Length: 325
Image 1 (cartoon, one colour):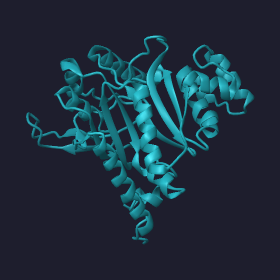
Image 2 (image 1 turned 90 degrees about the horizontal axis):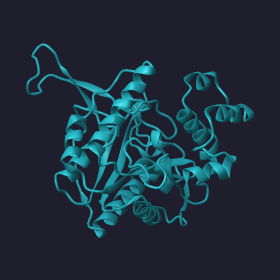
Image 3 (image 1 turned 45 degrees about the horizontal axis):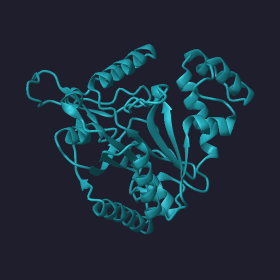
Image 4 (image 1 turned 180 degrees about the vertical axis):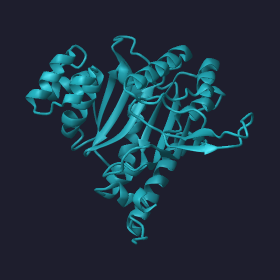
């Protein structure tokens, strides 16, 4: 049995340096570090994201004969927004997050996430701040910033907002990347995500970080709809050297709209034969009370350290990956 760590002492030192730089970055900007629970009674409803669960027998009001399901957080987002709704100012967190997914080159079911929220920021203010952080940690070039619509037009000469499902499937067939399951599921947004992941992502962020903003509404359930184009919501992602690094939003603050989107997620789950997920009622209550206008972003610390240390596998920057945990 190989009991030894997957991260070298040199990479452990680099990881510590990166985290120290991150903390100093936010201290200089007067953004407060917070800590929230890893366990929650509610979880995300996202069709393509599953939480790890555990059983707990001691919740107030629980039956002695039956345990309750708790969810390990896929991100600290809901708890952090509850802090904002309660009156907290700008905050950040370096937290463990958990997702029930396969492990691989860029994935481990347990990972470290940097998440922060800036009151009064729009998505472009936050994109600029993420850019500043990346330049501080990585010493990289000035990032590129392109809309989701324009990145499709530039890379594959198709408009994702006007192309039909049939046209997208035909494009995949021409690229010899079509699959029966994509045709059968009859979901345009899923096909767009597939095209983006398989064809566009490998072409962007090669020499400098690439930000892509204004994703289709169906791909941004926690973001505000853009006032000038209701087909898109104010979500952005950042890619660099083949790594999806950050995912940010101009945050949705409308409780009724957020609840509606969660319920729509569960309808999609049912249609795809997946179990529905309990909606986080505490989060909805916080939105009902009032979330200030803000933008927030989640950034993978492990992936950031990979870039800083030129590591090829996420296991190289984690002390023990899941198959050695």
